[in-house]
Length: 356
Image (tube, rainbow, N blue to C red; front, side, top):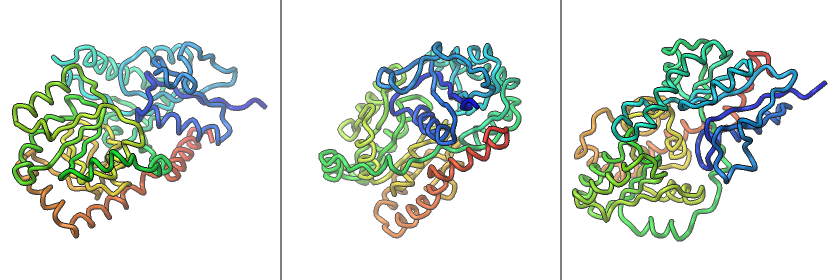
């Protein structure tokens, strides 16, 4: 009897990208279950050429009936899969509303609109839809997709056991209160609001510093954030790191004093679960999937009153009992996302469609 096949399809594969990392992890799960499983992508970063196969190299197996498609933006992939008459397990990672990019990045706005259109078109081919948050599941239901379930992002504990970058850790510890946000520089992430918060916090803690870790992604947005910091007189307290290696990412997470999010659109928010797992207290704007991801962890706020938030963060950093309670709740919540639990849930979903 031939080995069963179940492959994954992505629009793009990039090192350090959450969707790509989850696909690589799921590939291992599938292989552990006895499937022949590879990952195919339309765009592949050169660093991943040995791990990911070009989409055009895919050839459907004789007994192959299902495929896994991860949808997060408009691309050629849905039409390509439609031509192969495969039943889909659709994994939905959310599409950032195009309005965030209108007038800033027209191409990104166009691809977002295309992705939303394709979500409707994918309904007939989808046999099981998995969203990585309840917020995303609601998106799918509104698009008319049925048989929707939630499969959260899985946290691989081993990826967070690397030693710290000693030099970077020393620099961070030598400073004042260090605020951290991780995410590509993009309008929906609202990094400019973090700069406004820094301005208010420095009235209380003059040595406070904001670290923005993530790819300088949206056209010109990173420069605008820096310009705002110049105008507010806090440019010396702002560091845009660009994309960093996993060891440095862990160092920032373990050495910062508070993780702060002003993001107005998150489909999940991987840095939130990383912060919870590593014991970094979180203060986050309660928007989109953020409350789903945090659960009872972290501190949520509903209004961007920067002066009041600066006082809250100062109180959190100065009050060890409060900090300890927040961190304890976060660590309990983080257990929900550990790999063994998520893998078990995934296997259960496969069984429901007769694949396990």
